[in-house]
Image (cartoon, rainbow, N blue to C red; front, side, top):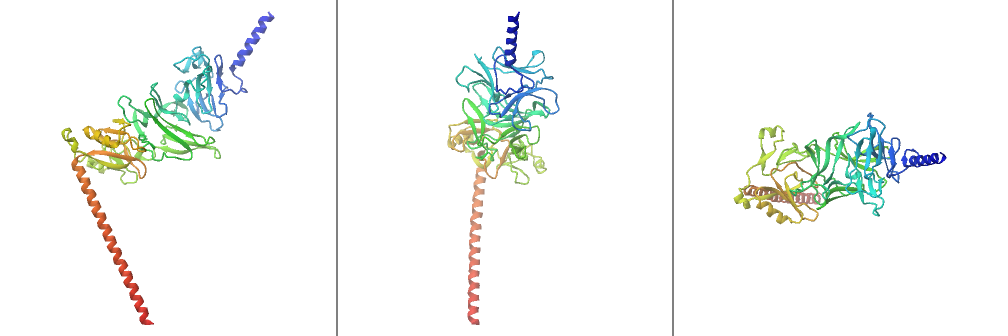
Amino acid sequence: MMGICSLMFIVCFFNSFSFLVTSSTVVDSIRPSNFMRENTTLVSKEGNFELGFFSPGNSKNRYLGIWYKNIPVQTFIWVANRCKPINDSSGSLTINDKGELVLLGQNQSVMWSTNSLKPAQQPLVQLLDNGNLVLRDEKDENTENYLWESFDYPTDTTVPGMKLGWDLRRNLTRRLAAWKSFDDPCNGDFTYGIELNQQQHTYPEPMILKGSSKFYRTGPWNGISFSGSPDLRPNPLFDYAFVYNDDEVYYIYYLKDKSVISRIVMNQTTSVRQRMVWIQAERIWKPYNSVPRDQCDNYGFCGPNSECVITNNPVCQCLKGFKPKDEENWKAMYWSEGCVRDSPPNNCHEKEKDGFLRFSGLKVPDTQYTWVNKSVNLRECRAKCLSNCSCTAYTNSDIKQGIGCVLWFGDLFDIRQFSSGGQDLFIRVSASEIEKARVGRKVKKAVLVLAIIVALVGGLILVGFYIRRRHNLFEGNLFIQ
């Protein structure tokens, strides 16, 4: 009898040790047979992040999430069961016999779980100091060989080192979705990700959607920045990169100073996407930048074949070679119908007679109907566009190296012009429009030359008048003496 009691005591002791239930225990990982329950958390090794159960705002629902450990304003970067809350305190997190991380609710019902393609011999779940919750095999010597990671399934926030975009090998897309409300972390109206049609070889670009409607575009990556985000430039806060190859398409950033805390978050407010920086002295999150910035950032604000120039009044104007589709509506500042061509390009039998006008400093048009080839130069790109009567514009995909070719087909949507930054776009027009532009340039040149001549003559007259006046004053002084 004593032997049985002793055995039961030992079993109970080890079971209580394996359960992560003591608040005094600080751990960063879970192994098979471990449970993480209410009132217990995982804390990353350096204490940057914490994983545990929480109730947002005034809600009584329980969620499993990750937040900044050392920030007094509880700020969440990831939620596991964001649309499937637990309505009591029965939640627990463990590794099941398949090596999957599982969130359990009432009556041991599965509320959320991971799915890894490869089972682990010795599974380990760990919260890393960059905020990434990972599942890996402890027997694998490569500690960065993750079988699953929360960074692949973001909620409303990106933090340094997190990729936003596509893993084409796994057909995995990482996109953000705003919380529905302060009390509800389920997906709201606004989502943010990289739009890409791999089969049609379209030019990828980040996009904010409101429901299924396009709300804001950054413009595609042009080798230096996104063409619609000229403010994305080298800065003292963070480094950034855009990777675009056969395996992956993603944006990523890293902080230059580890003492700085910064994140990108999606909101359900007018400032939909914001980069936030934690200001310790004021104990607040302060916006570093946000979009949309102005009405020109609203998708398609001026309609097709037009450009939005925020410094102009009115801000919308037709592209050169185009005119308002409805003059009366346009004058009434109803711009959504956009513009049509003054004179259409030649038919397909005479397409070689068409030409291109160069527009500078632009956020290039929506890339939904595009074709891209990263090895073609600009001259070859022009020839490809000219040979296809459906092609309406072209440009380089990499302005830093002056290579790559992007072709647009159909109407040109959501163009805006910047006073600095942006990129060139070559828009197809008829031969008559090219001639008009050529004549216009000649007239401008003649006017400029005439203005210079008038200025020079006027200047010479003024100099002569000044010399004559000085001479008269000098003679007058001699006479007085």
